[in-house]
Length: 330
Image 1 (cartoon, rainbow, N blue to C red):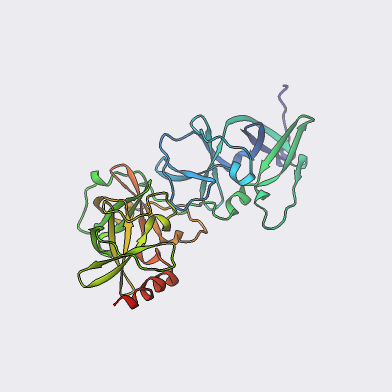
Image 2: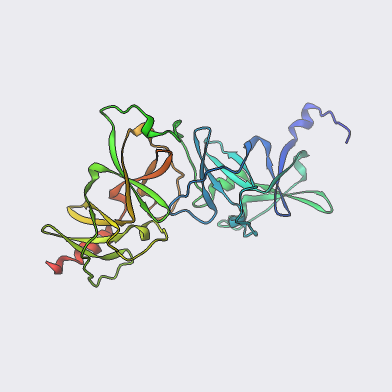
């Protein structure tokens, strides 16, 4: 192909795109919106309460990047084997970043802006992430990704105000007297942490009583000293797949909420660690029920733990339902 020299006015009327492939579909995105293209990460952390298109998130140069499979947004066929895929790091004007999963890179092409055909959609259509097309030839059509609409999608995770210490090993840090302590526990495949001073006790589950209470999160209750403590299945709260029965090899983390004691049933208690506020990494923000419970991410011995605010785990209605439902037990 012969090289072309463009005048200043011609350059202003042209855009440069990088093309990316998902299966046989060829997408294009403005090169100004791509920070870089990287290999699929060696380690990917899973996010509780994540939508199906959020594959997970990973650490790139001490920045947490949410990884999105756009196939789930556009109802395209997607392979579950991600190992050979590539990730395009997309920036928006607010400094947020998304990793966009695709199969392979294509070309870098320059087009006159007039060649782009814009699409019109219904206001609530998720397909708006495809802003239009560029017809290169009779057999080649590029689907142009609308970066701004990608970041507007409901529950698309955004990370703003990124901490610079993501991936830090807390064990190796020199802690000072201002450090806080947290309990790290597991529920299914998820690792969660809660501040130690927000917990009342952590106990082995024994002698669980069943009380007829219509609640999908309720497992039963236990006697703790002179208290009756309702048990909540934390796996149901975060939509994690785990054993739902309150077996005696599981633990209950007893929390005091609004003058009432509640037991969060978890699979295991893994660690007690010290941390400081600047070691909490920002998390993707999603418009999803309960997601406000997550304060951030702590890396403890190179494993991620999602720090929660115990006051935001249950809704007011759920707390009222649990506590009122046990009044007639006294």
